[in-house]
Image (cartoon, rainbow, N blue to C red; front, top):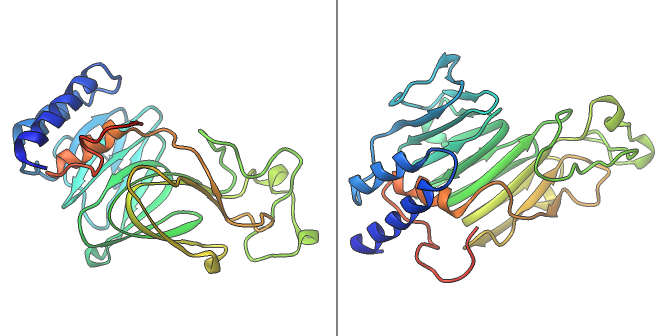
Length: 263
């Protein structure tokens, strides 16, 4: 996209941001003033109680390999690491691998929208490993025993779920009654390419590409389910937020300026 087209697109996003709750308009304005250049790495916006390695997060603070970012109830943080940008929502814990060369991100729990530059990245959640490159994606991860929000649990009332590593239904335990639902991950590949490997069923590995949220999934580690992956809907993230994140690193999402439905 040419510079003038990019600025026009960002101005449209800024107008939407100004009338949308969440206070991201200031970040969009900074991206506009930066033109095609990415803005400085580090924390761009903080809302509520956020910590990095156990210390209160501050505007401009760098997030690097080996760091853990934690958000409290109602909190939110936007930050940039190299070519990658993140919008981490409330009640979430995200860690970055100690070895920067591995490009590893671990979503311990919670919700995060991410955009990534060129080159391979690896994301781990409680249920799967994702190998990605040049991707935008949204993740909501709920480890076993935590209540899932935004979409139904894969284990319904009165149902039983198999602990990881068991395969015979007669050996299933009532996880719903004991520890709550099995681990579950919502994953939307907003655009780009992914190699997705469910932890509980590596043989179900799949590789696919999307351009605009075509294949959101729910991934489980419930061994009583026929498969570990099930189709889902687009939830809890927007094209405007993706555009914001891409603008912070001097890029546009592939759907920028297109005609048709937006999320």
